[in-house]
Amino acid sequence: MTASPHVVVIGAGTLGLCSALTLVEQGARVTVLEAQSIASGSSGRAVGVVGSQFTDPFEIMLRVHSLRRFRQWESQGLGFNHIGYLRLARTQKQMELFAKSAEIQEEAGLRSRLYRADELRQLIPHISPDGLEGGLFGPDNGFLDPHEMCNFLARMVRAQGGEIRQYRKLLGVKRRSGGYTLETGGDSIDCDVVVNAGGAWAPQVAELFDQRLHIWPERHEAVVVHLDQPLDYTMPMVMDLVNGEGSGLNFRHEKRTELIAEIHKVEQSKVRLAELLLERLPDLPDARLGRGWAGLYPVTADHRPFVGPIDASEPTLVTAAGAGGYGIQLAPVIGQIAADWVLHGAPVSAPGTESLSPSAGRSVALK
Image (tube, rainbow, N blue to C red; front, side, top):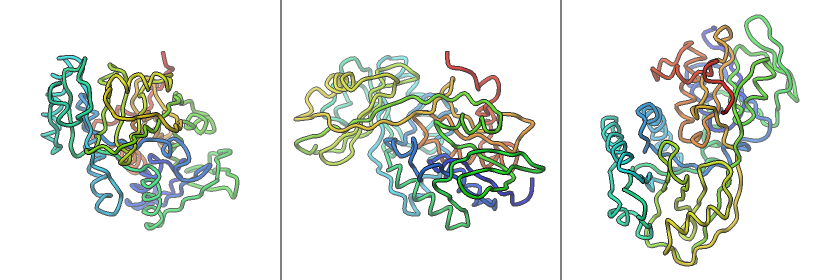
């Protein structure tokens, strides 16, 4: 690898732009190719939640890295709404997992607190605690605007000499000595390394390199909940899902008279969303569902992202995709790991994340 390789990043969503920014900060020459416009894919349709209330130490570690980056970017002007993140528990076993999570987060410098079911109305006066044991709340978590984030990252990339070419779809690939020649809708581009951050379209990009990538696009819909009267408190992000268990309902404050809600599970209807909201927020005054929009979760078989080369014999083709519904919050650390693979041949800044490589054992079909 040359000291300053020319890296082409495919995709101008959050994963691609985080990868591009980290690479250009470390001295690489970077060109981002985007088939449409910045944030035109899954990133631009996300609800933008950033949270650390997980029970798996590995998942928490990933978010520690991401939150460190978010704090840096916030100090540089990125908007971040610190409304808090509450993950609900339905069983005592989940509460025990939450207690351990709180300990791990505290050791990492993150604030979190356990709430019993009868304490949840301290956070959300309108919530029904029926069927719940309690929850884990992170007061510093929150949400951001994905379009703002992508354009913020794009400005940072350009300011440091990187190039972003929009409406330049990758059409073909030729391998050459020491790198690739990429055919697009414009002039061909010679580069040393490619980062495939194509999101739900990453498998099609991989096919152009004669590689196979098992990522599936799951369609999810978010819906605006209109309130005739503004709440006298800010609704934090609420998630009813722990390690695959729960309804998958999540909702949060958007504006004084608006919430945003979705179901973090595939093949759920707007009617089902309304039923779950009525069950969890039965006394929310004059609430009604409004417009909705759909986006794609790029998911893998084990529901963890692919970061690294598919083929160890071709380390110059690095994948950064498949983060499912957690792409926004994981984008900073995924970009960091992808840059490590490009520049160092291993994820040196986040040890242990070699396990995210799209190896033959992980890149398998969904069961």
